[in-house]
Image (cartoon, rainbow, N blue to C red; front, side):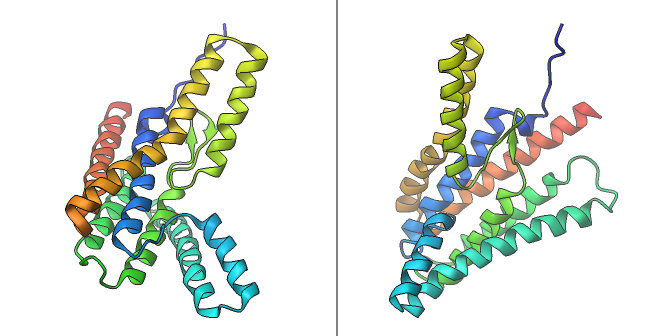
Length: 226
């Protein structure tokens, strides 16, 4: 009999749906409160960068270049934090501390009034979206991204083909799971838009609360495992 593989909570669909919701929420948040900028859509930023370089629009090119660089530094920082925390006496998964840090950072972003220092705030959030992107990268053994969608859309297409080829209940369940994961990004943009209209710059604190819930979830799971 084939041994059933068990995954920790942070590699299971519900946990990853919640943190992917945060990614979609933050995109809507910066769009609504920070001059229409999508903080973590760097494929589009790369295209805009190239187009504006070709047209000689240097200032416009710079506005697209800076979020890309900020995201790169955020990813590098996540690796630095991982290396540092791995050498400490921290118990449990190091990503608990990483989520606490991200939660605190997003709380600080909510203290900056709407339409004030929008570029700086967007770069700050782009940094932490790059940071988040590195924290949780698989769902049940399959690659998954929590702040960008292209690879996730590819996953859905591959699962669709598998369903068409095998036509079994397991393939159908997998397709549903990864489709839900992928579209949870768009689902996150809905409350991100509505809360931004209602709470303005403080709407980001919703994500602060969600991340804290995920930290508690991880802590409980680590306690149960140990």
